[in-house]
Image 1 (cartoon, rainbow over the protein chains, first blue to last red):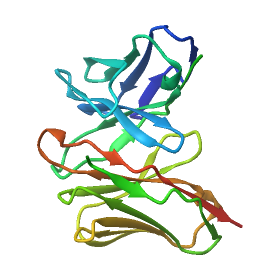
Image 2 (image 1 turned 90 degrees about the horizontal axis):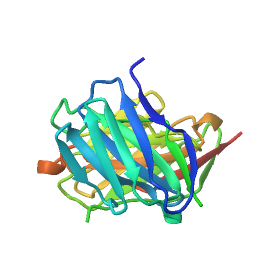
Image 3 (image 1 turned 120 degrees about the vertical axis):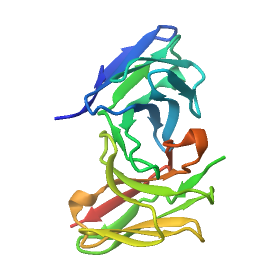
Image 4 (image 1 turned 180 degrees about the horizontal axis):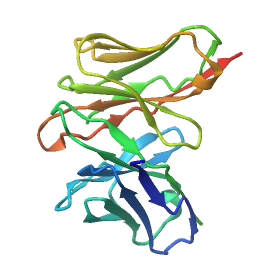
Length: 115
Length: 114
């Protein structure tokens, strides 16, 4: 089945370490997104990419970087992890078809703990 | 700043009742509206989307949109314990370079008790 996958699913790291979260999709969608979710704060957009050559900052991009290696792959990096980046991270994809908004499909999430 | 507001709940209803979830948004020009369901520890999954004023029904779910009042609601009829989850409202302002971005509310936690 066409799907959105994220690796790793769980990660524990220490303050100051560099880590990468990866997202792959087989839906053939052009658009990919990275969100983080914290209890009581909902989903907040970190970065998004509308195609391989297009990268945009979201609401909370500080401390993060991304790489769109191919249409199907979108990676999120924490250059120097800090404890307040402990959160649940979701990748999502979408395909603009109607010109009136679109449905986003979410991966299973990566639970990150920064000690 | 585009804001999407939801009552955080928890909203608790008995099995078989109607659950009503509400959402307001700040960007008057918003065009597309989505309801996602998220079980604890899982990823959000789409329940419904609505573009036009009025009601849209899909099984036990009805989305209602009132653009003049800037609110969108989700009704769940014949609520079941399996409906217990957090419901996220999302809005797409659908303009220019931000086309495709969704702005999410913080979610309303629903509990359906047997």
